[in-house]
Image 1 (cartoon, rainbow, N blue to C red):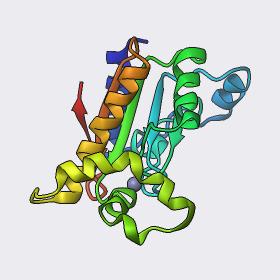
Image 2 (image 1 turned 30 degrees about the vertical axis):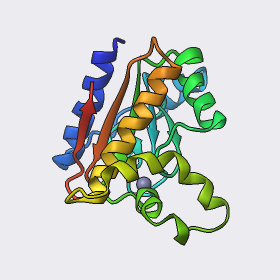
Image 3 (image 1 turned 90 degrees about the vertical axis):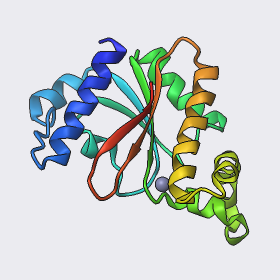
Length: 183
Ligand SMILES: [Zn+2]
């Protein structure tokens, strides 16, 4: 599958989800049995841990379709996250990496007030801070920071995986729409 075909498949699935006509593909016993012999995902999705933004649901995909890596704030800053993405593209041969941010991201909002965050959760914030600082003064600071953060993570992944197609996208919690930010 080419990167363009992978993107089209994701966007087709999101269109079905948005229009309340999901097909729930690849969830039958045949698919399960076939994928038990070896997974064949076509895209890596680096998404937020937010319970409202499950990639298989919002892209209407099934078993063995997406190699999903989730971390609050959808950041690609630590070795573990990068290793997961690397496994998806280098070992499993995924054609595309999508960084999926979303409206009203709690991690991004927390990064706007980092002093309010305690414990291990504070370690989530540093990779988000540059986008937050750049967004201050915008009409909708959170929305601007969400977009800026996705762009920053895309740039970081493109630097690490120079030969891999990496795109950024933002999910709207209300409409269910995924908008691609960068190509
Ligand atoms: Zn989030």
